[in-house]
Image (cartoon, rainbow, N blue to C red; front, top):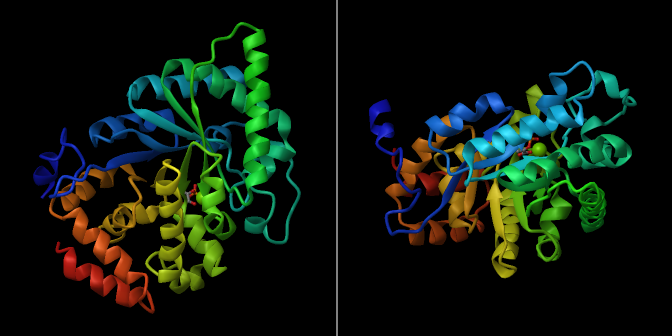
Length: 322
Ligand code: PEP
Ligand code: MG
């Protein structure tokens, strides 16, 4: 079975009826680049930079960050790399940042909220990213955006950092600025957000926990972790439609992207890119090569009207045979 997947290396990710998709890989460090190459990813759709910070006993310096980002960008050039700014908080802590204890960490100062609160740490990361922009196809992504104003504020800080670098005669190349949609408010406002951002990536791991109001790490609430619940699919559909309307790319970088049923369903809803653990890419590429995009579109629209996850899965199993 493994050798069968090998035949998918070097092939375009496309459906039987010729609709082309992009299948990207998620990484946590430059050490993961070999997986991106070996499993023939079309690029990096999510580089979780918090692990660079979690691996250090003190804050990584601007130069340390720059070298790491540069290495990742160069290694897959001209393929794109989506680098997510620090997503700390929730269940991830940095001992050296001295964060306050919170009653509801997943609803607290996490991700972009924390970056705004530690503006020096944020600006240092942005300086490193902008310096690295000269070495590849960089897309910078902000995590946990709840309202449009957060993106506008983050973008203004990026602009400030860019001007400072230009004054120092440091080269800054073109890059894109996007957001993660992982909070229901942002999905509901996708039409407005799509007018100001360059791209959107849906973080379904968090979108599911915030839509169901069930902690994603809670052992006895796993029954509420339902990627295929029509409630989740309707939110994703709204985002995909907004992307189409305003001509910006929408991807999904949560775990559900690598599921043999959910992955194709997302593409049927109009998501154009999936980003996943690299070892799943060839499996998804193979399944897609046997499906018609027109069938996926029809199926995806029809399951939005169903009652629950079970019904959605049973419809998917009629089309996707493994
Ligand atoms: C997500 O929330 O789906 C996501 C990709 O981000 P993380 O899993 O790092 O929170
Ligand atoms: Mg997330």
